[in-house]
Length: 68
Image (cartoon, one colour):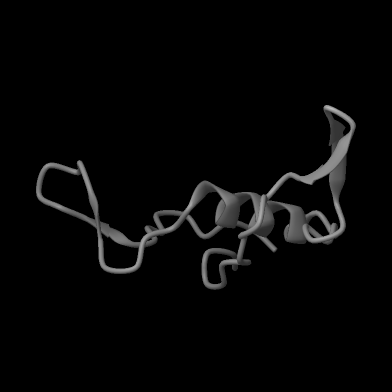
C-alpha cells in the first residue's frame, strides 16, 4: 500500500522531547517496512560476530494504520 500523506502516529509533549502515551520503537518501524516489502521480520537475520541476529531485535511489531 501507499503511505498516507500527513499521517502522524503517536504524540509528544509540548516541546517534542518525549513520547506520550503508547510510544513506537524504531524496531516497530523496521518491522512495518519489512512487512510492506513482503519480508517476515522474524525470519530475516544477519551474521554478526558469528551469531545470527534479527534486524528488529527481540521486539518489533507491525504498525497498522499508517499505510493506505
